[in-house]
Image (cartoon, rainbow, N blue to C red):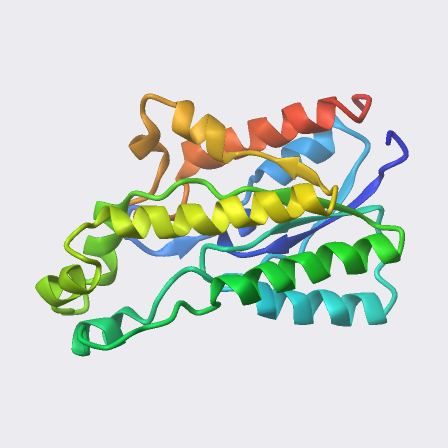
Length: 233
């Protein structure tokens, strides 16, 4: 395992390192946990994660990269946050209707499983990351800011805001379960977030993106993961 040298990262804004600044604009800080890992270990890390990316888009992106001859030893995969999300404006406008997440769970699992198998078939090690938890209240307030009908959305949620949290947790659990079934390596960042007494303080005002401290925690978890397989530089 110490032969790993070249790593690529595929996922959404979490692994992109995106957070909110003081003006509540999304930014990517210059210093990231990936740069820290490159300094600590003999690694070359290329981050291909994209803001708003879903598992189906990630599958297309990874397929194109493999067709062009993706040259790396391992790929980190992290999806689910956008997949489990809804068109909240549509929910607000028509709470009496049935609405589907951006990627229904069976399709999400299929895409993740296919990515893992594609990588392994080409001799590339798949590494899967679980999702950090979200703050349902903060996220509800955030996506309703454009003027959505909060009572209507809450009614569609069954009167329980924590439905948002549980739905996102379901996707994270499905991702972890798929990784275990496919015998892919798993980096569990969710548990350290949940163990933190100040979990809410590790998230941005939108309730879904880790803030600077949250990203530091993710970097620490990856550092501990790397220490099991790699010798320091």
